[in-house]
Length: 480
Image (cartoon, rainbow, N blue to C red; front, side):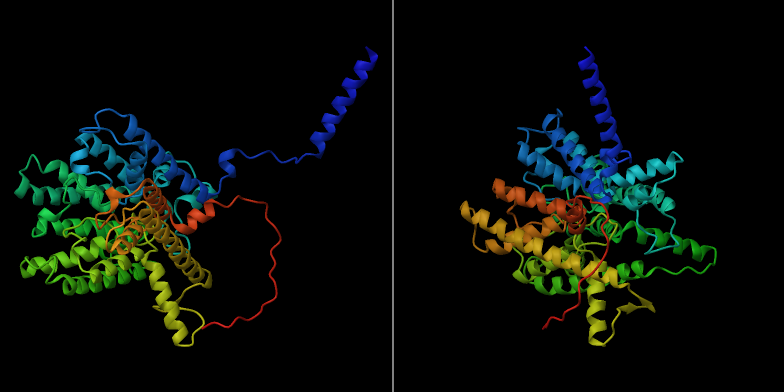
């Protein structure tokens, strides 16, 4: 018995020694070990998972046979990532309840789960931790005069106010053609889908039936542009409008100026080229004012939304290539749009101009852009191009391998890949015929395009303890 007591005593001392040698710091919970990019990406993954399960299990969503698990995942990803690519006809395949469920996913995905969390925390009167601030809104450097707490509240306020005004305008436009009772649901659905830049429609031909109706196309364009500007720019425009009212000077940040100028330039350039390319093709039968209106609509929807008034399968190759370029750029940071963003394009142009002038640092409007920001823009551009090249090759190869490629198939699949990455939703008609492999590729592209390639890459990195910072010696490389 004494021998047993000695063994127990020795075991206890060994345990105390292990506790003493162990790290004295308390272990972090699983959620605290996650980085902000991992939480952001995880929130979208969770919403997509819940949307997929809902599409498979909730009753009354379909007019016929329910979607398969893969098609349910595709549809949920397209809705949460506000893309608009569909393997079935939303207008006929889903009941009004099914369309309402998709609309809920669009609204949640457009605003972002993190935005809702931030607003809830602020509404309850709790202070945001530094980690929550970094996760929710990052405006301190781009616009230090904007209060992130007020911005968090205004995100939801702006969203519902703009969507309500848009729904009212669309109700008037749809009502004159569909009747006042039948126009209510399409007005609400398209207002939310347009502001969230989703591209989903309750009409089988999208907005082709309203291609000559400015009362429908103009509100949709305004909603798309408003949703694609970004909430930070909308907040600054709101503060600028208030400053005029009280006669106080207010200066828009460099970020918002670049967003507004780049957006206006892309819209103008796109509409001019579209009207030239399609004048005698898809716009041939339209009167002059309708041709101009539709060319502007094509320029607006190509960058962010995905509504269409023409058949892109019948459009010229010049139009489809220009659409691909606009889809690649996408909307602005902090918006409901995808793509590499307007500010990335603007910074690359400023970088090229500064190099041509022999300047070291890009500058604009008497402001210099930090080197780290320029490097981030270059990195985003390179990663986006690499992802799209790889995905386009894989998509084309997978479809050809299964014998579903058609004449001109490469351009069609390239168009599909860029549309998915830019979360646009336009298609040349190949989405429903994609193979399971092709659908998985498009699902991954939609997800990466929504959360951002750099954020997605950062979420894959496991956090490690901080290591001493050092650099190796410089050595030159010949370029050009």
